[in-house]
Image 1 (cartoon, rainbow, N blue to C red):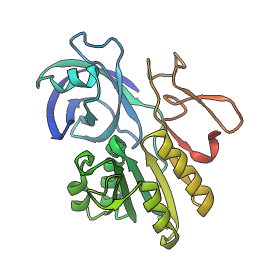
Image 2: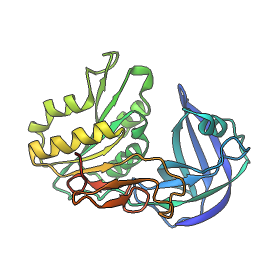
Image 3: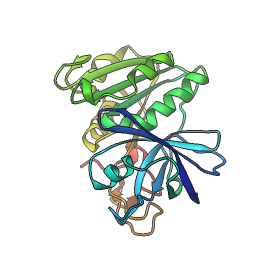
Length: 253
């Protein structure tokens, strides 16, 4: 984990209220599922914000974010060349499944950001993978054409039925998982979806890794504001012990 004083290289709309940003870093690498704590210049917000890392190419990190409040709104307005600070890569990422497994990447809404990058890596390695992506409506879906271009299978569900399966992505997964060869689930999205993935894993005897969402003040394990409980009732920090956990190691009660 490093502190970088950097500049915005690009900051472009990715569709709807979503944006892609790139900024220079001196990281040697990162694990998919790790995140970066990013300063938001301009004084709109005091604390840094955590963002999942999509990819690292040519010394530039890329994030995909959605405008949901004053912090991300201010971020979306930053022009190329703006100076900002970035701390990362933070936390623990996904464990890549064994080669004889099917990596099932399950995303809800904005949770597609780190999983899109993971799908890209798995495709490049010639690994067996499928992306399950759920959102409220067609307008909320991101990166779907890019995922298809990777040659990775994509299953979509929308709650209003405007694209793909009508219903939740967890329901769609339940309909399909029985026919999969050695599935290992890797999820990112709202806590309710992660809870459902944990249940699916138990029902079908499949390993499950989940990325937990939490409000973070520091992102480096000092403030303990992002703690959740493990299966033994102990508190673990999402920013340090996570954000990616084995679902069986967490308390879902």
